[in-house]
Image 1 (cartoon, rainbow, N blue to C red):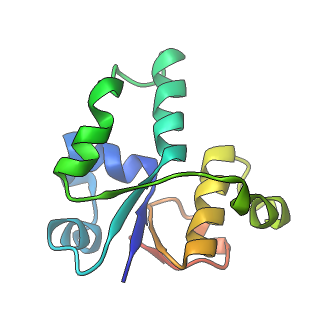
Image 2: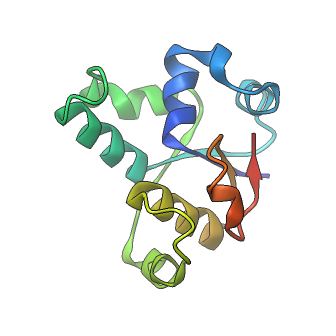
Image 3: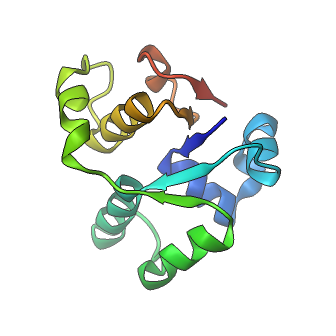
Amino acid sequence: MSYLADTHVFLWWMVQPERLSPAVTNVLSRPAGTVFLSAVSGWEIAVKVSLGKLEAVPMESLREEVAAQGWSELPFTLRYLPTLSALPFHHHDPFDRALVAQAHDEGLTLLTRDHKIARYEVPTLW
């Protein structure tokens, strides 16, 4: 099985792993498949840092941190746009909607605590 981490899951795994559920911690500690971090999450982190909504995250070493965790990068390309544009507005956060589209199109389970995401036709785990 392969997974896509929501942005908060990545951040918590890095600095506050105790905030993660036991199921997510188990997946991230001993992945039986691939764990992805989307470019969308990198974009979200960069935007929130620049707005002062998130403490400084070392953006220049984010890729290295993802690799050090054994995760893989998932680029966001134009191929996700048909799914993204067809999503119902259960969630209005553009970052989360993009992650849902990617998880849907790639057949990934989305690791998230966000209950709104569970309303979409994409598997989630918390």
